[in-house]
Image (cartoon, rainbow, N blue to C red):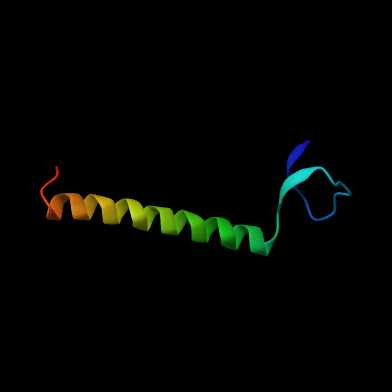
Length: 50
């Protein structure tokens, strides 16, 4: 089983593709997670939990 499928590969057992949608979605999820972590840290300092 392959994790990433190239555009020209003829496979059916893969999880992710190397295309524009996968790159955009991965970037979007990473940015949202970073924003959530920053929000927790900022609220921790604001409410003096740290």
